[in-house]
Length: 190
Image (cartoon, rainbow, N blue to C red):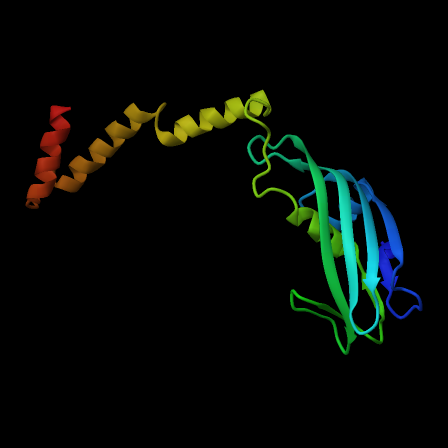
């Protein structure tokens, strides 16, 4: 990942442009949400001096898991972002400007490029309706039906009815709350 390091102390950095072809190896080393991809990234240093302004433009496609069926989903990426950097005593990132230790003098762009790509992705990444993996969607609908009680409704009703009768004190000598008795009458009508 040394190719993504820029020497901020080098002369003539202002106006310089860096080109990167980002592939699967890059995403494997970052180890994040994106599994694979092919991105062309251009980094232009717009100004140098007390504050360095970098314009980072990334165009290409990435492969991420679909939020619905977990199959591979190809997303088109097009993003242009700006990164402000200045030299200081120790590393800091306040959101507006990144401070790089002057003793070190290098800016590692890899994480920033990755973050800009991720931020350009939609919040939910899923296939178009009807394009998800059919086997996974079948399993998902089967489990949702079970959770919603469609398949096991009768078993759950009888189990909860037995528990209700126990709670109502039918087999015990404790007095029954009138509200529970009213609920039992409703259950018996069904």
